[in-house]
Image 1 (cartoon, helix red, strand yellow):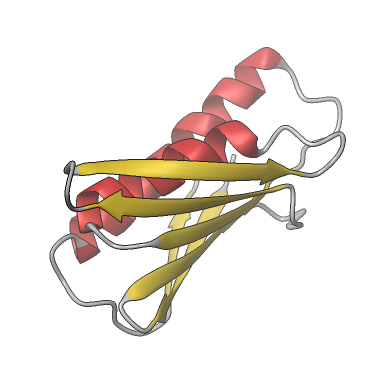
Image 2: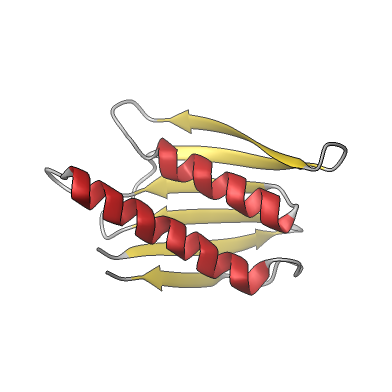
Length: 120
């Protein structure tokens, strides 16, 4: 189950879109790094009837904590009549794409537009 991650630098911050072939806006998460307490905090907004908030929250937290930068993550993954095992695989693939992104960008200044694919 293919999941793509597209990241665009916005100054020193990131705008990240995680999606599949049925891309849409399902949930939006804003991650912020708190330098005083050395922790990340996330706020999430989910569209009615969508379940993309789990991936959005986890992605925003991981990216903000690892990069120590603000991030806005938009997730839109859709699969008709999805099963629990498919949800698990899609979640693993999405979070794997986040880890691939972090391997490339942790500690670096945001660069140009990146696209990562995590096929399965």
